[in-house]
Image (cartoon, helix red, strand yellow):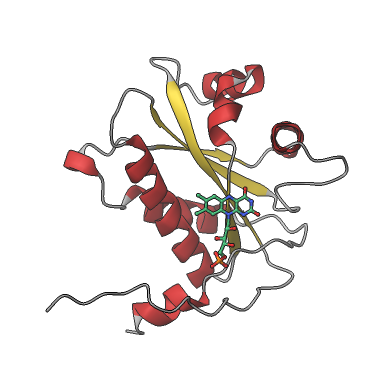
Length: 175
Ligand SMILES: Cc1cc2nc3c(=O)[nH]c(=O)nc-3n(C[C@H](O)[C@H](O)[C@H](O)COP(=O)(O)O)c2cc1C
């Protein structure tokens, strides 16, 4: 078995994708990695909404761009064909920790499958919008109020950037 650290170092935020759709089997594996993330109290609180429909993906991109204050034709999903939205009950106190770990796991699995991924923000504002409510309804999540923790975009990378050097002095051993 390879060293997991090598895989962790190989994962990078990808911001340039080909148009090729990701195979369902690979999307499922990425999602499974998210489902196996550690989670507060073992409650498995996060939901993962997989958006593969191009029209919906494009509408979410437009909304994300508007929330971010960018001008068209900027695509905050960078051309990635798949968007995984992580949502957690907004009343659950560990929602951000749990959701963040899900996205972290999914990005690592994506990288190990040769896919590109990137955490994209503004999921919180998205789920508060009319379009966000529509997505939750389509996903059958209407029982409570959900907070958007983040989007994990997925696709085949055109280019994987090199890692930035790590900042010095961020580790303190107290022996
Ligand atoms: C909480 C969080 C929010 C992020 N939001 C965005 C985003 O909205 N757009 C984007 O292009 N990258 C976003 N990123 C990716 C970071 O910019 C990226 O991880 C960082 O530059 C380090 O690069 P690396 O992942 O290749 O190490 C986000 C990452 C995190 C953890």
